[in-house]
Length: 515
Ligand code: AMP
Image 1 (cartoon, protein in one colour):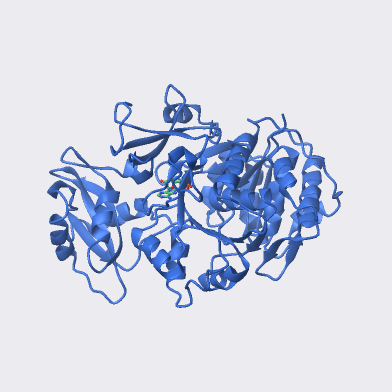
Image 2 (cartoon, rainbow, N blue to C red; image 1 turned 180 degrees about the vertical axis):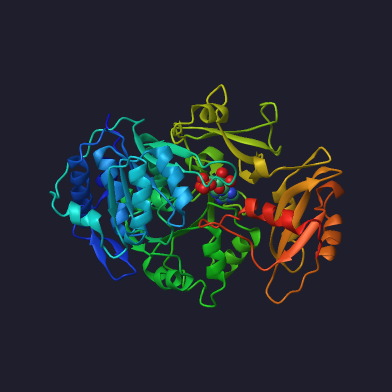
C-alpha cells in the first residue's frame, strides 16, 4: 500500500484545480494547480541532485507559500523536511546542522553568509535561499524543471519530517515522523473535526511547528479547503477575515488578543464554524469569555511534536463516550480514535480516574523515535510500547483528559508533590489576577519551593504578600509558593507556551523576594 502523504493530500484537492487554494496577505492567490505544479518543479529539482533517499532538507526561512511547496516537494521526492524556527541563531543552527547532516539547507538571503559557512563546514553540499517575496536561488533553480512529477511510493514508516523539540532542558531532540504517522493523524482529524465542503481556514500560525505545518495545512489540503494565509498573527486581520472563513486554529494567545478587540462579537463570528486551540493551555477565563462574547465554544486539543495530535474535545457527538459533544474548558478532551492513552504512577503502575500521573500514549500517530538518539528513544518508551509524553495529567470518569504540567516542572517540596497547574489555577481565580506561572526553586529546608509569577488584570495593582496570604486559604500550605513576584509579562515562545526555564532563571536571580 502506498502511504505517500503528498499523494493522499493530492486526492483531497478539488476537481477544478483552477480554484484558489491559498490567498495571502500579500495580495497573492495560488490555485490548486499552482501548488501541484510548483511542488512538482521543486521535487524535480531535488530529484536532479540524486540524493540518497530520506536525505534531510533543512529550511530556515520566513513563512511563505513557497515553503509549503518545498515541504510538499520533499514528500513527493521521498526526502525529509526539517523546518527550523527563523529565530534560531548561529550556535543553534550549527547544532541542528551537525546533528541532522542535511544534504540541502535553505535559508533567507539575509542569513546566507553565516548559514552557508556553517552548512558547508558541516558537509552540506547545497545551500539555497528563499525570501518571503518569491526571491532567492531556490526558485531560480526550480524554474528550469518540469512541472510534472510522479511522487515516490512510500511505506508507512518512511520518514517525512524531523521536528526538533523546543528543548527547554538539555539538547533539542529531532522527532522523526513518518508518512504514516502524519497521514493517519490527518485522516482522523478530518473526520473528528467534521471538515466539510466549503470550509475556509485562517492560517496565521508559523509553519516550522506541528500545529501550523501539519494540523492546519494537512487539514485544509486533505479537505480541498482554501486557506487565508497570514504571514504572521495579527488579531485585527484575523477578525477582518472571519466573515469569509469557517475555521481558525490558534494558540491561546490568539484568543486572548482577539478578545482584546472591541469588534469581537457574535456577529463578527457568524460565518465561523469552529475555533480550535492548542499548543499551550487555555485559561478557563479565556474559554468562558470567548463563549460569552461570540457564542462559540472553543475546541481545545492536545498534541506534541513526537505524536502530532493525541486528544481533542468533541466537535460532534462522540459515540465512544455516550454521544457527548460537550467541550469542557480546562480539559483537552478525549483520546482521538486510534490513540490509547493511560496514566501511570511513579513505578509504572496504572492509575484510576482522577489520579494524577504520567501521560503515556500509543497509536499510529506516535513517532518512530529521536533522530540518532537510540538511548534517549528507548528511555521514553515503556516495555509495552507506550510513549512517555513527559506531561502529567488525569482522566476523569467521563474520559476527559486534563493536563497538569510537564513532569519536569513538578515541584517536590518537603517530599510532597506540588503540581504547578493546580497552584496556577488557584492563583488565577484570585481577584485581579490575569494569569500566573509557578516554577520550583531550590530551598534549603524543603529541597524545593514554589516561586509564583503573577500578571495583574489591566488597571489592578497586586501585592505579592496578599496573594500568598489569600492562597493559604485556598490550598494546603505545602502547595503555597514561598515566593511571589508580580510581573508585567510572562516570557513565551512562538507557540505561546510560557517559558518556564526562563522563569526559573529569573527566580534564581530574584532570590527569595516577595513583592
Ligand atoms: P510541542 O512539541 O512544542 O508541540 O509541545 C508539546 C507540549 O505542549 C505538550 O507536551 C504539552 O505539554 C503542551 N501542550 C500542547 N497542547 C496543549 C494543551 N491544549 N494544553 C496544555 N498543554 C498543551
